[in-house]
Image 1 (cartoon, rainbow, N blue to C red):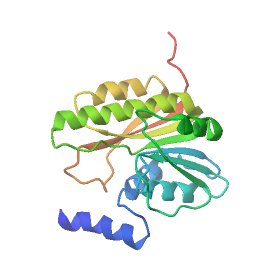
Image 2 (cartoon, rainbow, N blue to C red; image 1 turned 45 degrees about the vertical axis):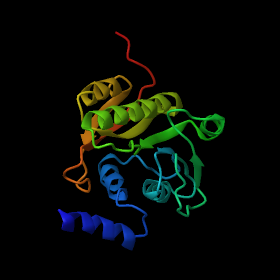
Image 3 (cartoon, rainbow, N blue to C red; image 1 turned 180 degrees about the vertical axis):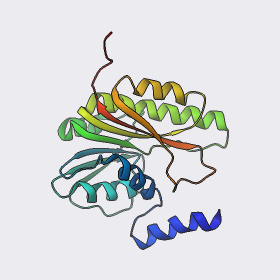
Length: 201
C-alpha cells in the first residue's frame, strides 16, 4: 500500500499539483466529461487547490471557477479562478454575493470532508452534513442540465442521499476512483442532467 500511495503523491509533485486528490477528479472527468471549455464551475472544499487547478485548465480562459474553502489554499491560481474563504454550513454575505455574481453554474463539485475523529459514525454524520450543504447550493445555483460531483463517506445514510439525488438529476452514478486509498471509506456521486425540481407524478 505504501508504494501505491507514494505513486500518486509523487506524480502530483511532478505535475505541480498541491495534492494527490487531483487524480480522483481526473478519473471522474474521464468518464463524465463535465468540465467543458467556457464552463462556470463552483468548487466547494477547494483547499489546497488541486481540483481547482485541474478544473481551471479543463475549462480554459473563457471559463470561470469560484473556489471556496475554510482555509487559505496557499496555491497560485490562474486568472480564471476566484478563491474565497467561507464555511458552507454557514455561508456569509460575501459568499452569497459571489454565488449571485458568478452563477448560475454549469457544474458544482464538492471535495468537502470533515475533520475526521476516527469515530466512524461521527465522521459519516459530519460528511453527510457537508454533502447536504453542497446539494442545497447545487439545487439553488445550478443551471438546468448541469452536473454535480460530491464526495461522501460511506455509511448507513449514504443510500438515502443517493436516492435523493435522483430526484433532481436525470442520471447518477457511484465512482470509487483507483487513486482513492483502498482503506478509505470515501466514494463520489456523479450526477448529471439537473432537472431543477422533483418530478411530479
